[in-house]
Amino acid sequence: MSKETPINGKRLKTARKNAGLRQHQLAARVGTTQGQISAIEGGRRGTSVEVLTKIASVLGVGIGWLCGGTDPDHSSPGRLSAESILEDQESPPGLVAFAGDRTLVASLDVQADEWGALRGLVPPGSLTKQGYLMVLLAIRANLDHTQNVA
Image 1 (cartoon, rainbow, N blue to C red):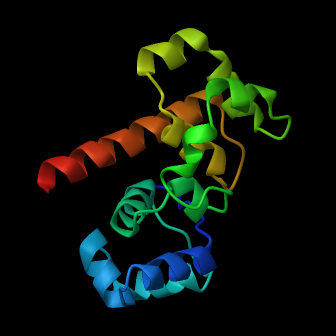
Image 2 (cartoon, rainbow, N blue to C red):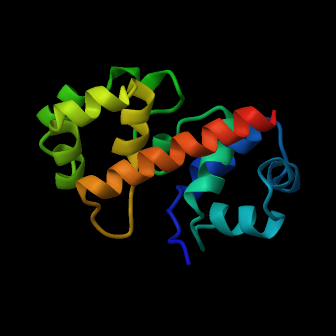
């Protein structure tokens, strides 16, 4: 059973309305139900990383922003880098450990929007370095799958 990732319901509703979509239309585009979208918007539940990634892609907003971060779209996270994560004293320890592994970060070629998504996560518990790596790989796998289907 996969864990649910919390989403800021008010932000989801705002982004959905800005995109001109009704709940059932967004649900159809991301492969879920209108009831799940309603529950997320109402703050009654989160969703999987897979559905979160699809929602962000359909609505054209950043994953980090949907999860409560400060970046309102895909372009704003461009300010983030491994260095900015390391300098931010409020960065979670697991993310700091991930950003501090220069060899791993370089081999993965982590992009600014990915740092934004990782920094914006609000997991139910703390994530380790390996946890952030797994989230990054899941995001990439979903984006690759979504792009190949389109």
